[in-house]
Amino acid sequence: MIGARNVKPSTDGKRKTRNDMILAAVLLLVAAASFLLWHFSRAEGESVTVKVGGTETAVYPLSEDREVEIIGGEDNEYRNVVVIRDGKVSVSEANCPDGICVKTRSASRAGESIVCLPHKLVIEVTGEKSEPGLDMTA
Amino acid sequence: MKNSKITRVAQLGLFTAVALILSYVESLLPPIWAAVPGIKVGLPNIIIILILYKAGFKAAAAVSLIRVSIVALLFGSVMTLAYSLAGAILSLTLMALCKRFDLFSTVGVSIVGGVSHNLGQILVAIGLFESVQIGYYMIVLAFTGTVAGIFIGLAGSLLLKRLEKFRF
Image (cartoon, rainbow over all chains, first blue to last red; front, side, top):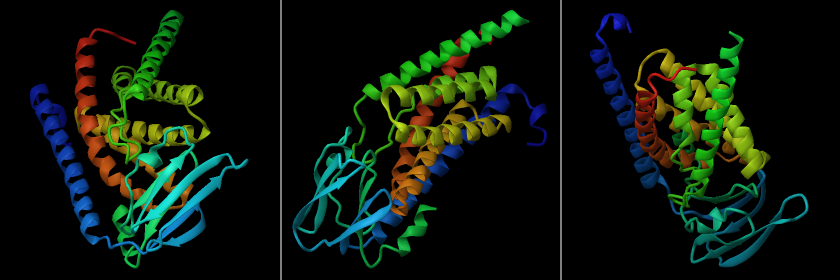
């Protein structure tokens, strides 16, 4: 920063553009590195945890096929249907406005999750190795 | 003097309306990748950057907060207000700091704005859901936020150049 005021506008612009590029490169590299770390460190999931509004409501083994209807909300107006099949969990039906949870691809590895923001619902796949990976989010 | 103040309020109101329209246009765009919620181009940020550079932090904060509140009233809920407010406050604060220390051009400022907007929302989601796992979305969002920030920053610098003679 020292001496920055003395430089000509054109050099100042170049300095800023260079800083822009460094910023973009650092962010993209950090994202790519975290993605690779996450991708190669996660283990196959063991169980499915259902959380509604931050409270854990149910845990199911990922190995058994099943279909569960999850009702939430103050007047039981929220409805999501969670399907566990072939070691994968997905949401098959939901009455939320955006339907993002239904479009989310099925989750099978520890650390993967399906989220329904309007219904405050999180479906998490957990496994033995799910805890050590958490510090990567920092 | 009084007149210039009235003009300023009217101008900021006008740009708030433009930002609102951009929010609406953005809500019409199909989701880029449905599996990860929160991926956005951030069109309204063009206006926020314009005002931050032209009229300063206070004016940009006013426009941003009014935009977020109206969007939540019109298209969203109390929930979306919490997410948007967190994103808007964090991103505007960091953008203003970057501009204050004169580190980046509008492109860098806009990248900081885009990524921190996502970060604010993810932090609220982690708090609301009490689940750290949601943080994994930030990996994707850091990437898309950077790319979106580059384009919004370029658009912002073009707009600033075109409106060089415009004064608040």
